Image 1 (cartoon, chains in turn red, cyan, green):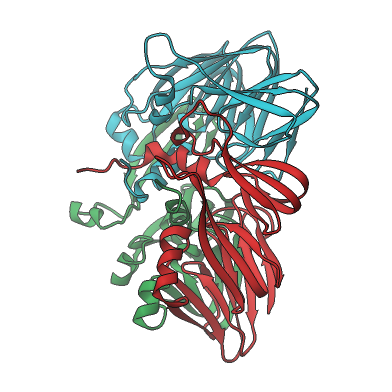
Image 2 (cartoon, chains in turn brown, yellow, red):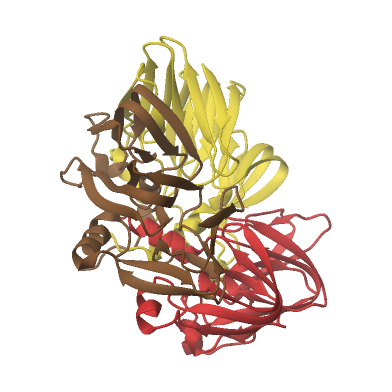
Length: 221
Length: 225
Length: 190
């Protein structure tokens, strides 16, 4: 699949050049603009059960769009947040992604959701997507994405780890026992152990969510 | 202690390198990553007058929880702001202090004293009060901004929308008022509250308006408890 | 307005004449109210800034005409005419507001984008654009607001309604949208 990440900088856009027979799967709502020769089919992916699980827990939407073109055409996709877009060639390895980081992928990339973290009063933790299979996977972050090679131990604040090799062990733990995590949402840290890569983003979606909290309307009973 | 601003212009972060035994303070919850040789402890600052420190975040102001980092051995801490933008940096030399507005305080060296200063509920339509963090002393002061930061040298008078103020020198006089002269006018024009500075001193302004950003995005999100 | 010197007065004006109260309510959050700034003395500075992350752009208008998403408009000088164009009934459901702005005349125009701006030139061709990603376009283009294909796609694709441009002319697109940002943030709201 031919693709180009354009407008590199803070607000890049992914342009995929679909040849006849190509299929591009993406999250709902990611299409910014496309040629009229591109068709979009909306479906639940892998049956209702897995879609619901992905939708309710994974932060990704229930529905996935598949783009294809009989005569060839370009489709431009964007994430909701400002920040880098990355393309990874999957070839049998597994990659873990923070929810909200998935953008699009070829039809042979598989995605699974699970939750890892401290279940407690505020259900703080990490919704993680596991990507496997083969083909190109497109993902994104909030802010700049930096690749870090881990040899041994590495601590990343929970909100800033966006992707990592499944070969790494990791643990979600409280960085400090004193403070209620609700107020910051990010007193959790991820402790990585082993050999592998971690990708960090330079802004935290959880910190943003805590920042915007007072601007939200209050629920009326 | 060494500081280095890293990242692209829209998403700057600051990397603080500490020697063994050095300490450094930041607003709690701003840490991105740190070496395993650095420990951090969260302290709260209680305001005299009986208001609970942590609740101030609910009011859109500064969290009164600080993280104190101590390096047991040489190590580094990376801090990041919440919104896209620059990290501001000033080296204070003791000649005057700075007021950090609207959550812009990010971190400071151990010789800098930080005190929350309430502006009270002076006519705040949104029910949000203005909280400034007053930083005095000598050493590095780290600020975060929404967008790009510019420094204005005030000599006379200067008016800025409150959503655009990052920080200003405490030798400036200031009043907080409405832009359009009448409540109705101001509100309709999307003008919120403005700070009118007078005297001589520096003001750091940011290119984007975070209050307006919150006011645009907030109501579109699910309501909160 | 983000910053201004002392010698500037502010007055509020409503674009396009007076609208009945009912009409204003349908505006889906777009404000047709603008501030008119005039200065009493020379050398007064006025700063206008956007609220959402992205670019601020300037255009020197020389009697051309543009259609623009109302939310992208920031400021203009006196010789630029500001009018409104009704987007059609479908526009109400597009999530971007009912009205587009029509800009013409001579003067300076400032507008902002959420994200980066991409310029596309259509040469007797077509382009489908998500309504949240439109900034402005030349009136020589035909446009319509339409669904994504079948009903299922329109409702569930997350795209909702899109704009179809046809003909020859330039379009300015932005690489992020407010709707996209809100949808993304929603996933982190407790």
